[in-house]
Length: 246
Image (cartoon, rainbow, N blue to C red; front, side, top):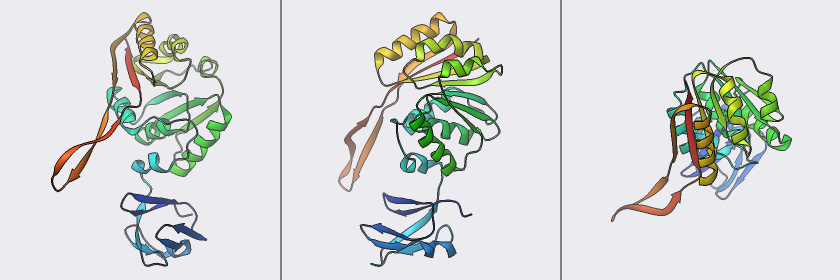
């Protein structure tokens, strides 16, 4: 079975999972059967003669094309979590608050020799995430529907990383310390500054060290012939708090 591909034309892109039927775009209709005999890098034309480039479905496409239920963590924040927690490709990760599965998918992609256990209490979100994991071809994710604190009680394994993106993150912190290896990290994402402060204080009470709390801003540049300046968009999404078990 052929893996999904992406049809690109500038900033416009379409994810193709099935190679039959028709794709209707603003630039015309593409007969998807034509893609069966084409390779990555080839082009396909609409009935109006407009060309689309055939590209592989890669990591950078997850955020564009994953189906969404809960609001996903942005790639800029995911990158910070990966970098600041020293993620290695053979890690055991506990991800509480799967949502649409965006963070779990990125973690699993970079953790190709390890495993990600992701927990979501809302079944409708978990089903969306499951579809996204399948679409991305990720097989090192173990998905559980249920309460994260209850699920964590059943684990005897020690995790390298615990990531929290859920409402009841503060009560989970003592449990996170129990299931983490010495030297392991916790990363907690919150959309509000007050909640991030509460997490920071709780991490300190539970003797986590190397504490950091920050936000990542993404400012797009408007590049024109006359010059370059920041666009009007400033992408703030949330706050990240990180600690390490000693």
